Length: 86
Image 1 (cartoon, rainbow, N blue to C red):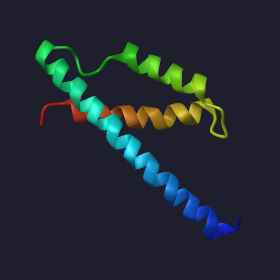
Image 2 (image 1 turned 90 degrees about the vertical axis):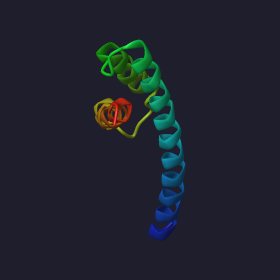
Image 3 (image 1 turned 180 degrees about the horizontal axis):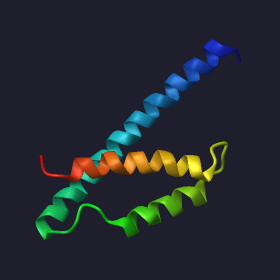
């Protein structure tokens, strides 16, 4: 494949990633609503650590475990913001 082919492939993957991010965000919003009803804290460091451990465990590269965790740290920041009351 040449560069335009790879770029087309990346565009296709980005479409899938955005769809999955939207599904994950919807789940985070639903969890945020449940947390609000039960007065549970938005930030749960133990849960976030469990997510980081999970994604590092399933990571098969070429991203390093640290890089995957960096991506997920930002993702968790965004998801946490969605759970806060507007």
